[in-house]
Image (cartoon, rainbow, N blue to C red; front, side, top):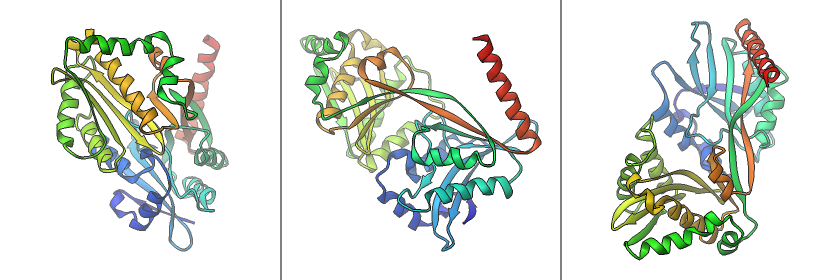
Length: 352
């Protein structure tokens, strides 16, 4: 196998992208996702590199979207996932049905060890180390390099075994059960409407209303303010959008962005208008969005994204961890970083 590098996804052959799209996979394994990140998050001193692994017939078997950044000491460079806080999972784009899946990952590891030598570390995040391609990554890279793992974030999920929402609510904590009562209460004094967008019809209206809620919420200004609007448009185009807005007397007061892909509902963003906090509009919207995930989408899993917040534990029934996998090159800079990291970990463990 051979490795070719592109700095623009448009250079990746369309045949690979078409074959990738045929595989049942989530948003974070789509080339459009990485296009979105490349458009919004890359700084002036960074470069996106798509490492493409080709078999002997010149057919791409896997693509590793990475960011190349200069080291602070001007010596060499670091590689890391084409990812940031918006990424809830990172996986290489691998044709999983191919018998050459492991061979492609092995070829990538061999290439990094023998052909591209100036990098000092490769940081992959957030990774699920139980996922097959990541298992292959860990095993093949370990043949050449030292590797460390650290916590990226905790991830609360609900594994649904054909349960209906009424049954789910009945066995939930009282705080969740009482949300129905709160909704009935505020409906006595206000006109309450919940609208859920699932496609691109009137999509710009939904984006405007989402931004109105977010800009009047407790949350900090987005680091990349145009990212979420573009993500909403992308999800609408792919028919995986679940954007809920709760209106009180026709005013947008709560917003929740869910993504439904691969039979999984991902709770991606939620916020509420501070002036309407006393009406519990955020909780009411979340309650109804959860019902949609159960009874309309029949989700096999509901994913509350990153974070170990107490309120997420009330809604979910399982917790997993996403990790940072750091690979250290065998050059002097890479060895120094590995020794530094392992000693830091030992000191931290000793202090605990």
